[in-house]
Length: 381
Ligand code: GLA
Image (cartoon, rainbow, N blue to C red):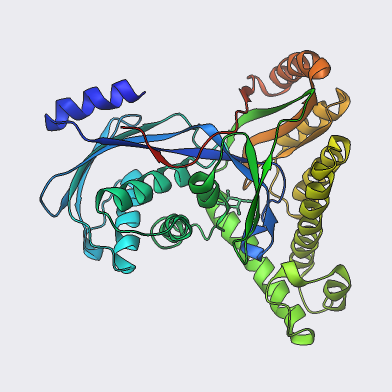
C-alpha cells in the first residue's frame, strides 16, 4: 500500500513527502457508552490509513484518494469546504486545528487505507487521526495527543454530521501493540491492558451489510440518551451523563420519557457496568465471564438499543451454537462486524459453520479478519 501511495505521489507532485499512518480499532466491550461519559475497551488494529504529505508553500490542499481514485483541491477557510465527501475529513481536521490556534498552510497529499469501509472498524477515525497527527508534526504545533483525538471527533461533529463519542479517535491515536485500552470517556483517564488470551483467538466476522441511514440513526440514539439523562437529572442533579445513573433512577422516570428512550437508556446503564465487570474479569484471566458479557451486550444492542440487524443476529446465533466463548455486534452497529472470542480448538469448526450457514441464508459469505492489536498514530518515513 505504501508503495502505491508513494508512486502516485511522485506521479502527481514529482516529489517525496513524509509518510504517516493511523489505525482503525476494535472494541472488546462498551458500545455507545462513550458519548454517555462511560467506559470503553478498544484497541488499535493492524489495518488503517497511510498518507504521504508534503507542504506546498501555497494556501491550498491538493489531495488524492487512491482507493476512490478521486482528486480534490480546497482552501483552508471555512467557506472553502470541498464537495467530495472523503475530502471533508481532511478539510475538517485542518479547520479544527485552526480553531485551536494551530497555524497551517497548504500541502499535497495522497492516501489509501485497508480498513474496510462501513465495517465498524472506524476507517473515518483512522483518516482523521492520520491527518491530525501528521499536521501536528509537520507544522510543529505541539498539540497533545488528547487534543489530537478531540480534533478528529470534532471533525465528525462539525464536518461529517456524526455526533460520535471519543472512542475511535482515542484508540487510533493512543493504540499500543498487544494492549487494549480501558478508557473513561468522561475524564479521559486510561489504562493499557495487555491482551493475549492464551488458548483463545479474537476474530471479526464482517456481515458486509451497510445501512444507509446509519449516521442519522446514530445521532438519534444519542438524542434518546440525552433525553433520558435530562429526565433523571430533574430528580438527581448530580447525574451529568447516563454513566452516573442507576436502573432505579431510570425506573423513576418511566412515565416521563418514551418507551423507546427508556430502553435505550437501560441498555447504556447496563453496558457501563458490563465494561467494569469485564475489566475485573480480565484482571483475573476469566475469559468465560468476558465472553458471557459480550453475549449480554449483543442482546442489549439488538433488543434494547436496536442497532443490530438480521445478519448480525444470525452470526451471533451461530457463534453461540458453535460454543464460541463470546460474540457480539461491534462498533456503532447497523451492519458491520461481530467480534468473537473463541477457543482455539473451536475456531475452525466455527468459521466453517459461519461461512456455510451465512451463505445459505444470505446468498454471500461473511468476511473474516483475525485481530492483531497494534500501535496508534505514527510517522513511517
Ligand atoms: C461509533 C462512534 C463511537 C462509538 C461507537 C459505538 O464507532 O464513532 O464514538 O459511539 O460507534 O460504541
